[in-house]
Length: 134
Image (cartoon, rainbow, N blue to C red; front, side, top):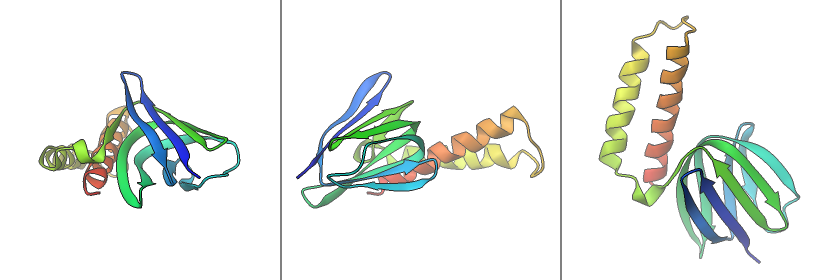
């Protein structure tokens, strides 16, 4: 028994295929999906979706959105996504370094929209690095 998985971003169909297991980065923590999972709609956080297909694990960096699980079908609608194997690790590391230095410009107690944006960019860079390693 397999799970049909679709990962859709506004500008492209990122992934469409089957998986034996899917792990989603929901806003409440990691959510494991196996065949026969109950129907569910959940918010997706910035993070890494992991899928097991033919006993091999693959990763997709997700940049927030929603997922619907229904009858062994998982549909993930996200703002943006990248297949882990297609991420250039060197460029991702540079983006991570830039995001860290941008965030370091703010004081720890500051609560500005610019700081929130810097934190968001750091989370995206970390997800891309994590997805590129698997």
